[in-house]
Image (cartoon, rainbow, N blue to C red; front, top):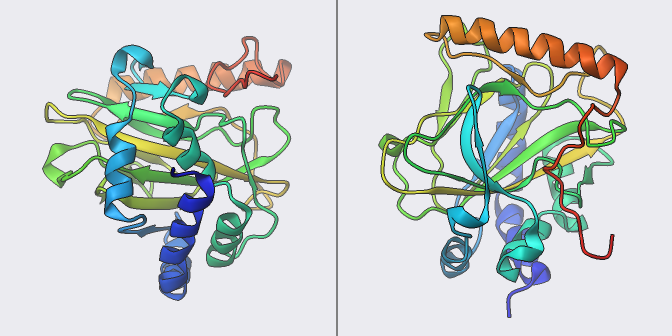
Length: 275
């Protein structure tokens, strides 16, 4: 039976063959605003297919629909096929974390076993994620969010399908960069005050499936980094929407100045049975 140890060993094998090139790629993209890298064929193809095949149905997930986003998420991992929990936590294996630290030249990264804003996401026709900055901190506002890990498992996913990751290293007034949500591809990107990113609208009657994790640290990327809530913006052509979302972000940031952990508990957290 596949478990997180088997999966993490396969992840490490892929990384070890390419770590030098990935280190160079991350360093080069960091100078352009958002450091990132991606690695294809991360797992043996049959394992990647198995992961995709056991993704939950939409009825067993949480729908998030607003001006900001339209997607399904799943974080309560013990409700689903055990393979999904195993693959999520394989990315939290200490050796996997260590090799990513080396590639990104960061020390003391901490994976998040509570899966705050992590877990699974599914996006079908019409679904999207507007340009945004991830929340700067973890659930308890004790550590800084440093890296976003996105592992895509939808077979034969093409660029014209939409549902692709978009990075905006030069800000939202300039052209973004599209990274295909390719089957069996892992994308690792830095998250900081300039890491604007989005997901293009899905154009086909299929579901783009993704396994996500975040790594945190006691120190931020930059010495002048400041706390912020998850901050959404409109796309360049969405002028009115952009104004509304900026206003929303301003007031939510003001609330968090008074209520450090927010007024309402964030439900996007894995609450394990023993807790």
